[in-house]
Amino acid sequence: MATLVSCVLVVDDEPTVCELFARLLSREPGLSVQTAPTAEAAMYLLQAQRFDLLITDKNLPGMGGIDLIVEARKLRPEIEAILITGYASAESVIAAFAAGASDYVVKPFDQIGVVRAKVRAALDRRTERVKGSEESQQMALEAARFLGEGKTVPDQVWHALEQQLAAYELAIRAGAWGSVLVVGSEAAVERLKADGVETDLAGPEDLRLEVADVVVIDTSFPDWHELVERLVPLKPDLLLTASPGDALEDLLEAITLKLDLVAISPQLSARVQALLMRQAVQAAKLQLAAALSAFRDGLAR
Image 1: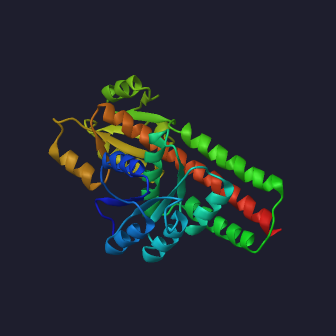
Image 2: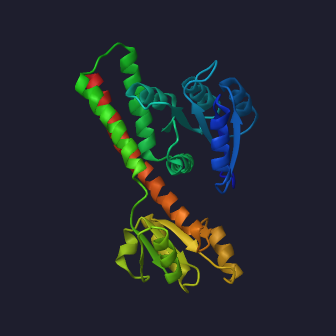
Image 3: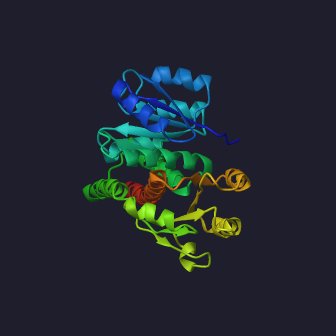
């Protein structure tokens, strides 16, 4: 059953890393964060309570991060996991995905927006079980098994996977872009443009709404309910903007529909950029799954 709060456990023997994640994620709505300095301490917490996401360093004193992911998923099969690594090599990514991680982040964390987007994408995967993540794990499991059996792969196949890892990093670091449309609020358009987000005002019958990445709808637009119902099956990310003077029933309905409700402020731009970044992460993960599949096939020959 879904809960209103998602629980995240961060495991790292460097206090500054734990503090960074705790500070970063505590600002996200609906997230509760706990930290642990070792895998053993993390297992104690995992046995005591439910966590939705495990973020762990690869190199820990005692049990390592990859083994922690394996044990955590035995205990909590539904948990998502992200591995913290100093370098995203083919070997470490295969091992992480095979253990059950759905993504990784690289130290140092020079782009906090990427980290935040990966956390949100992982929590979304827990809810929706995105196909690309499941495929990545399966491909990595088979590749790890072949490698364990002593099978070899041509240098060019290793090189291709390393290139895809580099492309994955590049894609997510440049990923906060896409088509953004606003319905019912010129103020929202002006706010987004002032913050560097390319956007345009659209009418409710504008066909671009059907292919947009993010659609922002103001609750002052009279027929926003009908527009939301039409767009939900098309799966753009939807945001509602509201002001303190809006009708209470509209605000309550937005909450009931589980739509993001934000004010026309810098908060709106930050939320749109976060959604675009999350989409970039999801798209890049599909590319990475394909690269792992090619690597697996190279081992199988």
